[in-house]
Amino acid sequence: MGWLAAALFRRVQGAGFYEDLHRRAVSLLPPGQGAHWLDVGCGPGLLARLAVARGYTVTAVDRDPAMIVAAERTPRNHADGLSFRVSSLEMLTVSPLRGAVVSAGSLLAVMDDRRQGLGHLLTLLHPGGTLLLVEPTAEMTLRRAWRWLHRQGLRRMRGRGWLLLWAATRQPGRAVDHAGLMQALPEGGDWQVTGTPLLGGMVTVWQISAGGEP
Ligand SMILES: C[S@@+](CC[C@H](N)C(=O)[O-])C[C@H]1O[C@@H](n2cnc3c(N)ncnc32)[C@H](O)[C@@H]1O
Image (cartoon, rainbow, N blue to C red; front, side, top):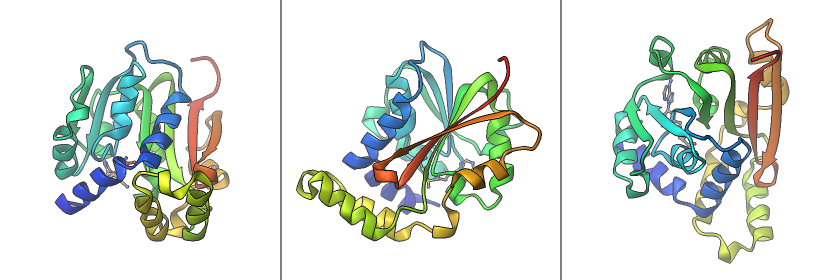
């Protein structure tokens, strides 16, 4: 996407509502105690940084070198146990990198082949691991975002304009819902899927793991 997109995402990730949303998403998982977390499509690194704060050792990748430069230039990302690298989801599947947690924020929303993308993400999990997806829902509309901001006390919200921009530019046909997710999961698996609505239902955090004994 390039330098412009990286600069834009850096601002979005600095918005109060966006950081709060991702902090809540990360807090759905148990403390890491050093376990490896792999964040795919990390952008400027917010989710990765929050995962480190939760006690994980994190490798965060993005296929766009400009995103990785933005991540590395963000002073708050300079933490022990956090590393960034340029790589794509597709390249990861043929690398030895795996995670007890694999995460992807707003990645499925930009992928043309969601089924293949999900399949790839799941192959990156250690046995018994959890895939964490943070995805906007069909509920994210400009009207709803505006109402939500009012309910929160519009004036107090740092970076509120970025939520309106997100809602205005979201492509409705790309929203992830439970039925679509179940359809896109690889067949024959005993998938455990939990969806937690956040941001007034405009975003769902999905936790997916393989059923049965780890
Ligand atoms: C919508 S942005 C989300 C960034 C960040 N995860 C967040 O939630 O703020 C999607 C990111 O995924 C990256 N991306 C898209 N397809 C990818 C792929 N196949 N492998 C790795 N990264 C990818 C893009 O470069 C972009 O940085």
